[in-house]
Image (cartoon, rainbow, N blue to C red; front, side):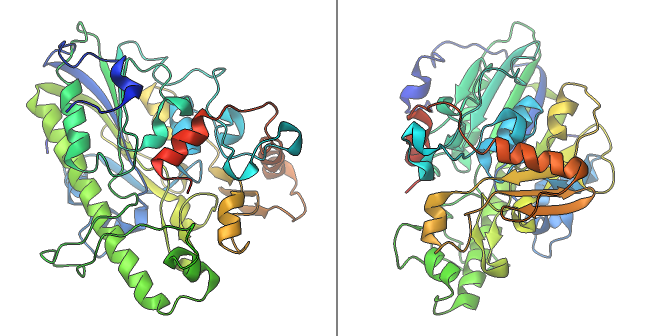
Length: 410
């Protein structure tokens, strides 16, 4: 049903010896794939008019269960992955942007709190070997997300392991020996994340486009002029980034297919496959762009695919992938939080990214900083959002430097 180079990083050089085969070429694999930055409504598997996800469609045709009504628990990579790995909401695990407070003497525009060591992670609870291969550099060691994994492979910059690059890393890990123990393999595929590669002229369903990346620190960058309402051709710009994004989603889906094929080629049997996304991408809706720190539909509407178990109708928290991997059956609230990013708020003239936000989908509720605190359960969640917004102790510079190297901070 599920058919379908060594790192150049100091981060991993002491984690794995490339010359020593460590995994056998057979055995059971439980696979979690995160298609980074993929929003549900731009997947043909979810009804989008462009053929962006043929691999996901084939998996569904072969019997996998798909929900296109999942909601990301966080607004960007770090908080959502931390929820996937711990089974806790961002207000509990605390791995997100924070307001450091003047007493700490920290630059609040670049202060992000990593995942702490007080919560058990998915990898730590796994009975066999566990491997993390991530094309998204935010999952590097300083994030705290690598804790518990036996083997970790993460690049330093976005784009280094698009497409075949991450497939090669997965192939490399499959050479290693698990001593018969089950393997948990977590793969982040980041082809849909910027920088977006050029759209080739041979693609029939989108216009050819040059490669593109937002450079929001530049005053004349399209990101800033679009947000400010001064872009000379906003309609044309939206068409451009939609073509680029849709092709990037198509490439992510293709990389998923290549990943599944290389696992099968190495004689591995995927006993459970779960696929989701950590967040989407805003493509000009309501004058908004990019992702993170905003809880709009284009940012939060993701999907979940489960090879073995039906998914409930209606909104569900994408964090369900954590529970299903560990055989848990908990009622999960369908809600998310976003914390401000002072630097991006400044770039956008204060129009966006500058407030705390909370949102629930079941029942539908929204709160933005400055409004009166709501009552009952959603009000308790809002209180937790407020409380977790401030750092309570000085934070080291490692994660900030990791995010800057990844291109997240300009």
